[in-house]
Length: 328
Image (cartoon, rainbow, N blue to C red; front, side):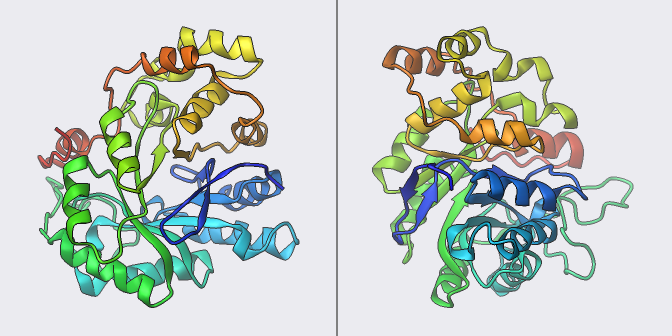
């Protein structure tokens, strides 16, 4: 069993600090990776409708439970509401579809994936619906369908009331959006999941979340590595190639990945690195047997470049002919 520490959410639920990310986890391998991760001690799985692999994640969970590796209550499962399901009448069906795919009775944490609402795409037409309404169009574009966040959030709160979800939260939200949501939410957001790595430290956002009882989850903790294969970054930009991080790793006998994850955990938030390699999976979880000094923490934080790789304001215009900025 993992010795991974946890952070406590508003509901009292414990969220393990290191989880397994499943974005870009390819078909045919996801189930085995999830099962092996659970065998290795992972108890936190990060999923989403948009990743298109929740049914395989569910297969991996079932295999591990059937083998006696863990029980359902031992696993913290996160999923996310996609942009096309923001109208109140679509929120519960979207959640129920995710539950069906995962083979679960409840989700531990359900997030609004982006503060972007798009035109509804029926399940039978295309699932997951992705970013564009008609991928066959000569000039494919996003079909924006503005929905008040308050409407979507009220429907998210009803999922908690119905027992389908334990905690609710958001992803890719800035301070202003969070402040607005906190002003009226009956059930406050427990988590804000955002891009976080040594080249994008988001100091103000992390501080704002902490001061308002919102746990932060950092995705893409290695920066460019997650985006090089889809043309959104260059692999050499990865923080794993950074000389400062490399030297700190040598001092502690740890890999650059472990140093990056340890830095994140010492900043007080959770992280969801992805890997299909079993050895790296184990390494990513093995970051609690050493501690970075204050000087080392400051050196890593000093690498900040405000370099954001996952910016819809950029890629929706390049790929989908639609200008839709969400970050200043």
